[in-house]
Length: 468
Image 1 (tube, rainbow, N blue to C red):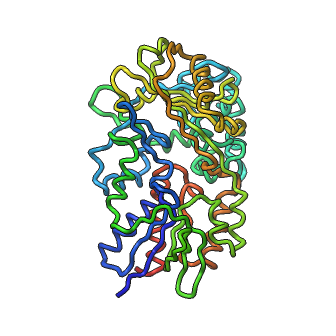
Image 2 (cartoon, rainbow, N blue to C red):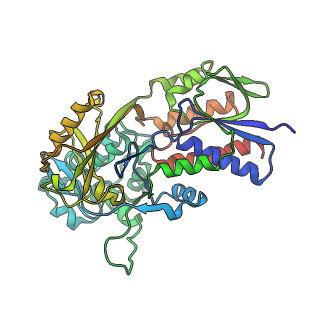
Image 3 (cartoon, rainbow, N blue to C red):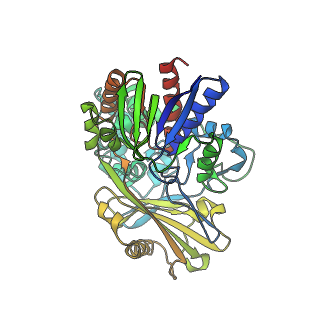
């Protein structure tokens, strides 16, 4: 019997994971289907790129996965990569406020204090700001809401000072966005539920957050993030290795997808046509209106904003850093006169990434109000970053080399109403495009484990649709 084809569009981590789980299920149950993964560029992995140079391991995109999110570690174990896993080095992290580095208060979650003692001692917030923040304990729950901005929610609970000095630098950095535009329900719906259930975010977090696991081993507990000995791209290579030969079609953009009586015709830029019984689209949201141009309900995706970011990795002799800082990095509040938004002392966070006697520092630029910085020439970006670094450190030599990575218009912004828009589009798709599923960082989470989880769910939806 001829095999019918399931097409996956996009070869980032979502697409590769979907191809892996789909193909695995088809083989285990000897089902008469095949998988074709179509990728427009000449490489796989999307934003995951590991660069090796002079003994350094440099991540050009994300540098890790969060360990507490189970879909990531589940896939690691499935791929047989558990022995390759490394945890991040732990240590003090900082927030830069008005030009000064402050230690991240202990006992806080995403900037929200869970332990009152350490919060009262921090210099991040004035006495009045602390008093205002602690009103969260007595404010009670807010009005029930379908959605609201993350910034408005946090400001109502804690006041402006804690939000701008501690919460905003942490939360906006995750999504490369403005918390006063970001959707609460698309980013941290758990916060809303805690407020509704406990009348206080502080009380809710204290009640529900898992207690730290005590170990007999001395030293710091394992880091909250993980990567691999040879870099994050290890997972990409292993996924590709697991796929059957002929599954992947590189340098093939999807020009158009046409609905037919018995499925879909996927028209490629090469001129080839793949007949598909189901399609999992994992590409950015802005590609969908062109891919399905005859359907008006997808045109709204053209208006969903995306931001740009760049990261600048600088390699030094360790001796060039005269005023070192005991920690793993810092984030920058908006009220500081800095162009960088965050800095990672990679040689401390990931010691295996850097040769002995060397230092590796990675800085980020591209806050929502400073998007033009991403397009500066390389030498200007390096100069800008060094100028900012030397406001808190004393670096006496130029870097041995720099690696600059620009990500233009690739960070989808989950603005207020995001979940409603996605739900509406998926409902319309189920009616007009049965067997087509939209997943990836544009939809339900930008982190790697979130994308892996979406891919798993999409595979189950395809199986249910095809009754296999």
